[in-house]
Image (cartoon, rainbow, N blue to C red; front, side, top):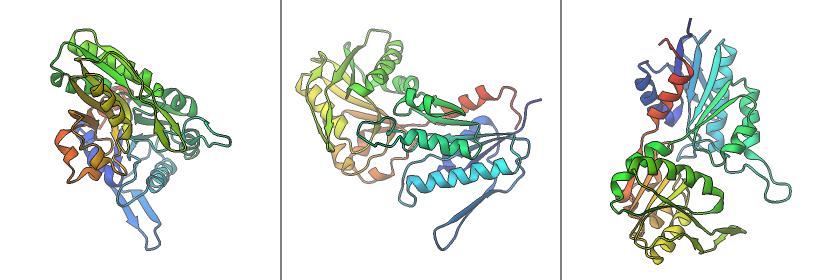
Length: 321
């Protein structure tokens, strides 16, 4: 007999948890979150979790109130708590997974953040981690010894973007070599949606001492609608470099697609640049840093709750609520 499912949402991720719960047709489980004067915290479920499948939603991005480390600690403590109180299976739902960018050693004595985060989840007894569009899917899969699923938003994002691409010729452009496979995957989905061939291109990018350089463009984009595809937008510099290079090479328009919109640093002014016709991100990270910015006029946000609803339903056939 299928076990009962209970879904919890921590902190700022509660609205996303509510959307996932609504899609599953179950109520969001009750919990208490309490702050202590010295900055410590306490979180506990307010209903029994014994012999249930527990899902805990917490997207691990820094915001005005908490750092990524704060959120990671809170999530780990709550996961350990429900495990201690008899949950049959525990799944961490982290649409944005912090430290996923540091997945390989590029300098002597470099850390491996992805692997260390995986070890923390495993240490508190998590059975599965469910996330969205990590920086390096292969490194993510290899880092975890518990279950680890990386959901893709490419199909939904391609369907949302397609009506904006009016021309016959479309080129999907990776802004660096590391994202080439990601761009190729998006190209396949966009080809299916448009029903016609879509070309693939690459932008040169070098990073040394925090300085980004390289302007070579390996694609024929003259007269084409160009779609720059990346996993996340931080300051927006990488997207703008690729967009300007494409327009300088004769592109008719440039659109950008990224799963996670962090919008840090000077992103508000960078993304207001009219070189970008549109920017599509998901709500794995709400665009709170763009409040009042001109970039909001060309920004479109795709809800990710349906993707997690589908994943949870696949994982729990015949689910009980």
